[in-house]
Image 1 (cartoon, rainbow, N blue to C red):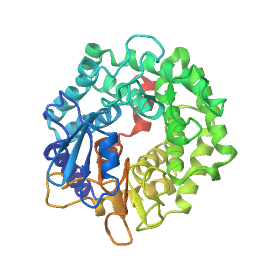
Image 2: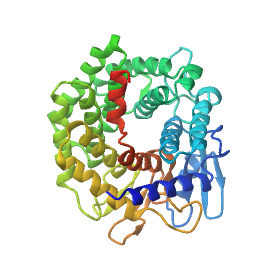
Image 3: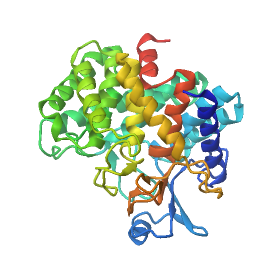
Image 4: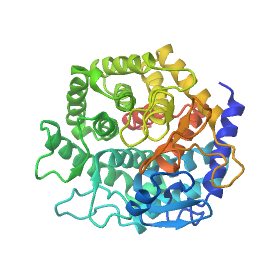
Length: 406
C-alpha cells in the first residue's frame, strides 16, 4: 500500500480531531466527546438529542459532549502512536492528558466495591446510574495495558496495570455468570448479550491481554476457548457485523494462545466475510442500530472493525487472503474519507456511506448512520489500523508483547 497516502489520511484525520471541537480543551484534560451529530436531513435527530442530552448546538450540527471511557481510550491510543510515528511529542502529551482525565477526573472507574464490579468502568458521563458494558470495558482493559507498557511512568502514576488486572478478573466473573445462561444471572450487573460476538468476542480479545497475568492464564484461555467453540456451532447465524467482531477476537487470541480452535474460528469467519465482499460497498450493513442494506458501508459497527480484524488475522495467521482483504478495505476507506471543506467534517469518516450513489448517506438511527461521526469506534480505530500498516503495531503484536514481557 502507498505509505504517503496512508500518512496523509491519518494526518487529515488528526486535524479533524483538532479542528472539530471534539477534544476540548486540546490538552485532553477533559477527555474526548463521543461524536458529532449532523442536524440536516437527520430523521433521528430528535430522538438522539433526547437520549444524549449533554450536547452543544453548533451551526448545522451538535457536539455530543458526553464522555465515554472507550472513546477516550481509543483516541488517546491514536494520539500516542501517531506522536511516535510523526515525531510530535505534543500528541504524546495529549494522550497522557486524556488518560489522566479518565483516572483522575472522570470518576468512571469503580475503585470501591458494592453491587458493581470493582475495576470496571461506567459507560458515559450522561449515565445517572451505572451501566457497565462488556464491549466497552474490553477496550478499556486492552488499551490500559498498552499504555502501561508504552508509558511506564504513567503506569507508575496511575497504576494502569493493576487496575486492568482487577478489570480482567471482573470481566471473567461477569462472563461466567452470563455465558451458560440465555440471560445474565441476577447477580450479574454487566450489560451486553454475551452470546453475540459484538460483546463476547471482544471479551475474548481482552482475555488475551489479561492472560499475561500468569497466575490466571489458564482461566482466561479456557474461557476464550469455550466461547470459540460456541461460535463454531452455528457460525451462519451471525450478522456480518458480528462476524467482524468474531474474527477480531479469534485473531488476537490466536496470537497468544496455542490451541488450534482460535485458528479455526479465524478461518471460518474470515471466509464468511470474504464471501460477501463487494469492491465498492465492501460488506453489507446488517447491524440493528444503523440503517441496513447491501449497498451501505457501515463505519460504526462493521467495516471499521473488519479492517482491524483482517489486520489482526493477517498478523496471527499469516494467510495472504486476510492480508488482501485488509488492503482492499483500507484502500476503499482512503477513497471515501471526507474532504468537505468544513472543520467539523474534513478528514473524518462519517458513520454510513452510500456506495450506490458514492456519497455519505443512507439514513440515520440514533446510534448509527451518516449523521453520526464518532471519535472512538469509527475515526480512532480506522486511523489506528492505517497507522499500524506503517508501524507494524497492531493488537496482535501488542498482546504478544504483554506475554513476552517486552
